[in-house]
Length: 275
Image (tube, one colour):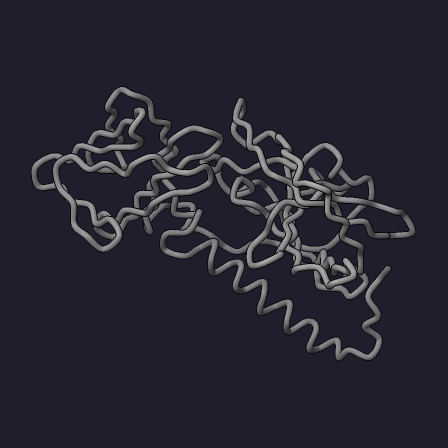
């Protein structure tokens, strides 16, 4: 059901949303945020050099490694390294940031593949960023739902923004709710913080006013009785909405809603969106 905000000061509601929106934009456009990415490099057992990172990079049974040339240096976890350096075997969706001058070299594993993804503050996508269009916040898009945990987390395979790549998440449960008189449900993935959840979804606005592939909604940990609040005003774009150099997951098939969620972030201007 829709959250009753009749006694809530709409000005406060709007101000809270604006602070959230500005925070999202600041993180996205940070000097080493996703808009600063200049390359997505896939590693194998052959040493490779890239124009936006120092050294030659490869991966093998012992994990990711780099061989730096004379005069080249990376700073890894505060320690300068030269010559050959091994980052070791990285966990899925894990990674290490190595500092190179004013750039950061992200070393990570995505979809079972080791990658190098440099981030440069002077990347044109970042320096030309003009902000993300969004719907005006409206309390009607804040709804209460019910979270039901699965008996055991369900391994859920989803596609990715990169063709041929797959992600596997252990879905802990699903969220049921009503929107515009329709009973709906979303499979939830683990989110940030203890008990937090994340839902990936598309809806009838996807590919029209919002990004076609996906949007994300973070949920706070459910109450003891399973009550959870979905504030679709805070539906966000994933990095793939801005750049082809992201490996973002796609929503599971059951998270494709047939209602129009006219709330949250719209298609970025970088993809042809308008305010």
